[in-house]
Length: 442
Image (cartoon, rainbow, N blue to C red; front, side, top):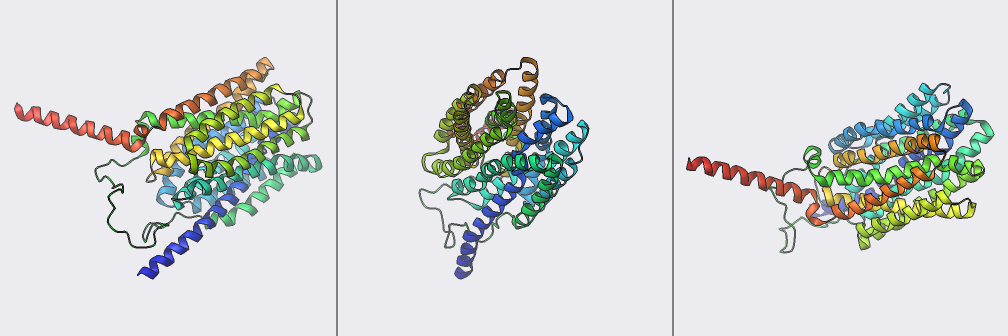
C-alpha cells in the first residue's frame, strides 16, 4: 500500500509538468492569432474601407462572447475536466480563421472573427490557468508563470509573422496559414489535459495522512460552500472583477491601437509591429519573473509595483515619437502588465479558495472580458471624434491604477471569501436563534 502511494506521488509529481507543457502549447496555438489582431484588423480596415471604431467591434465581440461562455466553462471543467472543451476551442479557432479568409463584408468579420473566435477564445485563459493551479500546491506561482508566458511568446511571434506573411501573400492567405497552424499546434496538447485525481494523496505527501498537528489548520465542517451565487453577494467578488477589468481595459486598448497610433506618427507598419513584439518579449519575461517573485514576497507588492510601472510605460508610449524609446516603453509595459496579471492569478486561490476555483475564475473573467471589450472601441470611436489618442489612453491609465488600489483593499485576510461567507452564515444563524428564542418567550 505504501509502495502504491509512493508510485502515485512520483507519477503525479512528474505528470503535472506534462500538464504545464501541454497548457503552454495550447495557449501558443490560441493566443498567437489573438496577438496579431492589432495587425490584422487595421489592414482589413484599410483594404475594405472600414473605420477604426467599426473594425475594433470585432475584437469586442470576441470578448463579450466569452463572458457568458466563461461561466459555463468554469462549471464544466470543475465537474468534468478540461480535455474535450479545449479540443473544441482549438477547432473553433482554426475554423474562424479559415472562414475569415473569405471576408468581404462587415457582417462576415463580426461572425468569423467575432462570434466564432469568441467561442474559441472563451476558455483560452481560464482552462489552462485553472487546470495548472489544480495540479500544484507548492511551486504554483512558477507553474502558472510558465503557462502564462505563452501569451508573451505569442506576441513575439504573432505580429512579426503576420506582417511578413501579409506583405508576401496578402491577408487572406495569411488567415489560411493561421487556421491550419492553430489545429496542428493545439489539438494534440489539448488531448493531454485533465484534472488531477483526488483519491490517493496530496502531490507533496509521501505517507498516509495522520491526524493534524497542533499548528495545522483544521477544516471547518460548518463553513458554507463557496458558489458563484454566494460569492457574487460579496463586495470582494466584485472588486476582483473590477481589478481584472482595469487590466484588460488598458491592455486591449494598447494591443489594438498601438500599430495605428504609431502609423499616424509616421512609423512604418513593420516597425510598429516590431514594437508590439517587444511588448511580447516583456510579457514573456514578466511571467517568468513575477511568478517566483510572487511566491517569495507575496502577490500584493508585485501587483502594486507592476501596475505603477505599467501606467508610466503606457504614458511614455503615447507621448514618444522616438522608435527606440517606443520599443523600450512597450517592453516595460509588457513586463509590468504580465507581472500584475500573474500576481492576480497567483493570489486568487488564496482569496476565493480551490473548491470552486474554475467557476469563480469564470465569473471573475467577466471583468477581464468586459474591460477588454470596451477598451478598443472606446479608444477607436473617441479617436474618430477627436483624432487624439492621449484622451482614451489617459483614462486607461487612471482605470489601471484604480484597480491596483482596490486590490490592496481586497487582499486583507478579513476580505477573503471564506471569512466573509462564514461571517454572513453566523449572522443568519444568530438571527434565527434570536427569532426562535423570542417565539418561545411568547
